[in-house]
Image (cartoon, rainbow, N blue to C red; front, side):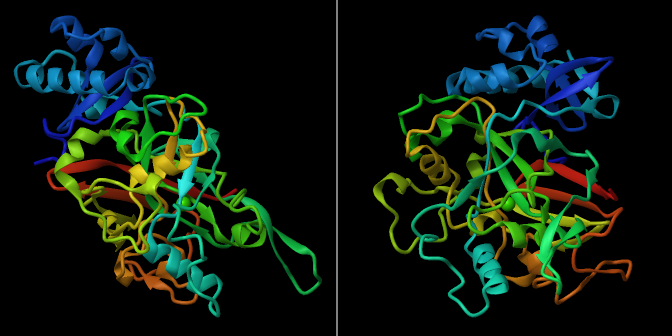
Length: 381
Ligand code: CA
């Protein structure tokens, strides 16, 4: 079992002989969907599969997404048209990211960060249990798996002379997250209710929110993350359709106090998706998405409740996924407790934050479904 069977069928864009093809992955092959549609004409407009990006399919809406998936599950078992070995293609950025928003939806992560940065105060700020906290990130630096990540330089907290220090980040980190990909747009002035989540969200991808903790710590008050985050965000080239995760739906762990009406969701609103953070071949953490406090439907409702519109290609991240156990923490910040407790890799090396040359891979499974991994290697500036 590969995790990429007929029950999964993630979408991507594969490059071959200079052409960018809209594909699904089936085991260790990709299927050129335009070629398949020529041989087995579907009941929907095949122009949505023409490429060179997933955007036309994403914009077509949930009815077409269901039609395409039903057609694929009907046709693929008896057809090899358009079938290309995965090893013969190069996966591309599957769509142009429109707006990028990142949330902070893990109670365990937010509590850990609060304890590390504000040890003498309540770990959670007063708003945290009432709304999914988020910020707008930089869409133009969302890159596909495999893109090298250059260690960013920036201002850090002042030294003894009172002047900010400047130079390459000395506390470069990862954040293991899920990314939610918006397909169907909405109109400005019209909030999207939580119940319309599956009408607007096309699918899910793994996301690594590279973070420079020292730059972040100096710049983030009072307006939030900026250059400590905006230099790079990596995503998997594979977008898993929401329909492939139906069997992974689970109730949220529980919300207290009860959220406002616009944030109420029908259960099960969470997903049992188990992640792995792999550093130079060592699994350093296994964050459980099922432990997240805020659901993706609530995040969607919150980011549109003021009437802000959705565009095809909007991407929103879950925030770092951390479970209650130490081995379930989705960032080096938490694994090393603010850089004070180094952890050990299989080769005996220790880490607090990333070193140049380190490769980080995020993997995830949800039952029989394996999400496409996201990898990145850190290079010196
Ligand atoms: Ca993040």
